[in-house]
Structures are given as structure tokens and as C-alpha cells.
Amino acid sequence: MSTHGAPSLQVRSQSFRDGQTLPPAQRSGKMRAGGKDESPQLSWSGAPAGTKGYAVTVFDPDAPGRGGFWHWAVLDLPAAVSSLPEGAGAEGGRLLPTGALQLKNDGGFHGYLGAAPPPGHGPHRYIATVYALDVEHLGLDAGFSPAKLESKLAPHILGRGTLTGIFER
Image 1 (cartoon, rainbow, N blue to C red):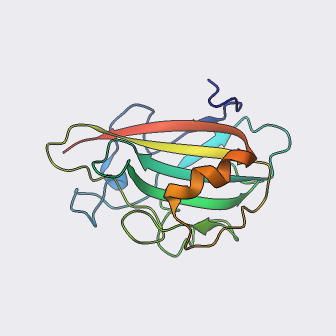
Image 2 (cartoon, helix red, strand yellow):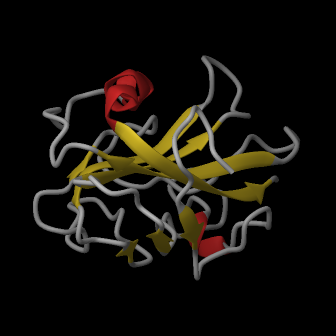
């Protein structure tokens, strides 16, 4: 499936299946949702010719408030990378490739914040998106807001793929 005219990447995870409930590791401990705040394992394939780098985001469009909640954004992943291990989104990014940059999530820190929808709010979707880009580096710094990221990514997207986990309390 292609979105916004970009060819589709195939995105998989050993942590969860598309459309299925997120396991405890990908839920939040910091926000008292019984989890570990470990980013999911992700693998991708099918990048178009000319791919020079990747970006990965995890977004909850169902969060109350100002248009969703950014759980993770990692930029400047090298073109040779086609997977990230579970927990790569830890603060400090020690499991990320050299040069990768994590933006501050909507919880206020650089790293992955697990799923934590408000109790009784119903099921939320946690959409992991991998973007194949025509640049190695987007030229952003760690202070850049994930909410503004789409406009910076858009002119550089060669392909994208998504995987969606579900969670409710």
C-alpha cells in the first residue's frame, strides 16, 4: 500500500504484530501503565533506490488534546540500517547506530515513551512509521519538536511503511 505517493516499505516487528495489542515491554512504566518503556524491535525492507537514510516515529493519533502524542522520533539512521533492536529508544540511545538522533517525545525526554492511554479512554493506536529518505541527515538538532517533523520529512520521503499496535486501559 502506498501513501502520499511514496512507495511502501515492509515493516515488521518481533515485539508485536500489526493491529495487535502492545505487550507490556512497549507500554509505559513512567506513566504507570504497567510497562517498561522499551521501544519495539523493528525491521524494514523494500527501500527505493536512492535511499540515503531513515527516520522512525511512533505516534498516537487517538491521544486527547492537541492532535495526538509523539512517543518516539529517531532521525539520521544510515541507509545500511534495516532494523532496530528492542529497547533502541532508551534515553541516551546506546543501542542506536552512531549519528542517530532522538528527538524529545511529548513526555519530555529524548527516547521512547511507552503506550499509556488515559484509563477508560478506549483503544489507542500506536503507529510506528519508517521513512526512507533521500538525505543522510535532516539537519535538525535534538531540540526540534516531533510535532513539526512531518513538514521537514515531506520533501525527502522516498518511501514509508507503518505498523500499528493497540493498547487501552
